[in-house]
Image 1 (cartoon, rainbow, N blue to C red):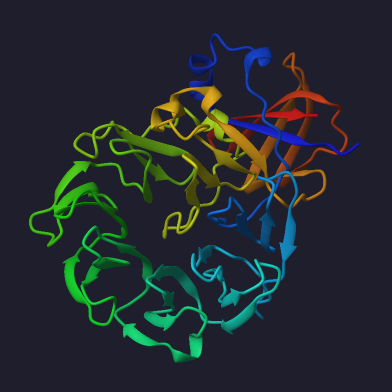
Image 2 (cartoon, one colour):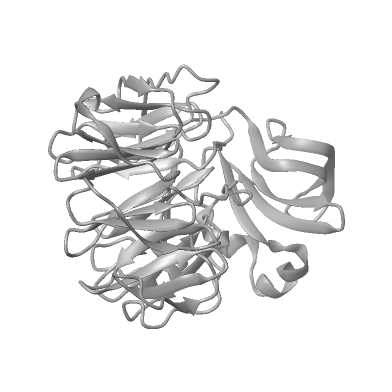
Length: 401
């Protein structure tokens, strides 16, 4: 029988006693997870519910909401076939994939089974608008008709484009490392509207005249569409934002920190909370590079999907559920990731030591200077891992089924 690894990430060891003072192993939720390690995995959900998951070894597709997966071929010609960006053109069904780790950008016309690689240039973002594809390649933004890369041309050459967003008036926003450009002619010409010394992450339209945006150190900001006198609403930076209803907005920093607005961005809960770490399911917070999530979040039928290293977290169950459901363990589902890596638990860095305790607190094993934990010899049951790095320590809960 294969060991299926279930992981519940907790706070630092110094906070554990307070957080789990009234918690027992019996009432901790134990969603099943197949361990899968990757860099900033991408997720894209088609109108029919097909989920595309881009990871370290290619692109996976499920048509039965995560019960079974098929692997697509994404040969980029580089050292690995990592996929961090996915975009589906709704009219044609073409699926575009990008590799921002060591380069690659291509298209699939058969539902993600095979890909034609356009270029091995680094691809940071892909956006579809009115039959055109905008691809952030290296330090330029390229525009081309859906399906016809060779008919494309450069429309912005001012630096790495993290993402492109559309406003409520049809205008486009290109978010670069530390600048925001806008276009009112479907991306033919661009005007610089905001420049900062900090990294910029996203733009979210609130109305035809008002925007939210994410900026390092400045945090979540509010501004007019012309970016006159932006105001910081919350000093905690978020890498992404997603609208859950007419009034509810979820702000995300990686898959380990969240904040909410229940009044369309007028007030934002402070600070970013990490209380739902224990039910998102990543063993260790996934390695989030300075570019932020890129393409790790999507929604379908009122559900919000976050692609994590060890699971796809679904953080709302029903079409009428709002972001408030995040406050309840019952509002979270986990789909196993599509690729199993044997019987090991991959960590995000080399730890000085990892101590393994059984359910009654007895030390049963210690690993020194390790990057992964061999779980093949663990019997089914509950375990606690104490991860030590210098003077710091943190605890991960593990269930082997």
